[in-house]
Length: 129
Image 1 (tube, rainbow, N blue to C red):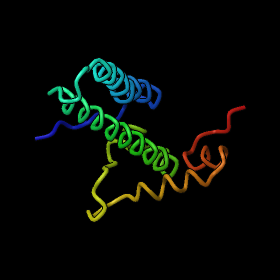
Image 2 (cartoon, helix red, strand yellow):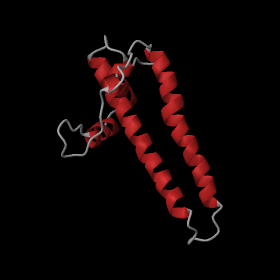
Image 3 (tube, one colour):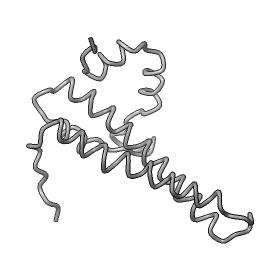
């Protein structure tokens, strides 16, 4: 039913593809949609709702993507032998009452209360020199 994922790409290659295909695509799409929204002359225009909903959906998608990426970095620090792609593909954002729920608010609160070096350490990243 599903194709087996090949996790053998390097973390650097995954990061490059991740940025291009996930984050930049959604952000650039939102910029285009927002410019279309600015050109709407009448608030009763039938195109406002679909444009607004797509922009909102893209922001939610970007937020989920970034949270999944943060979780993947944390998991990579715990198990560095597995690729970042492996960790990312095993992260799922679920509703709060679902089994396996990851408390995304907790990680954001945790990040908010840390300084830059503590965040780098949490994510398993080295201190830039």
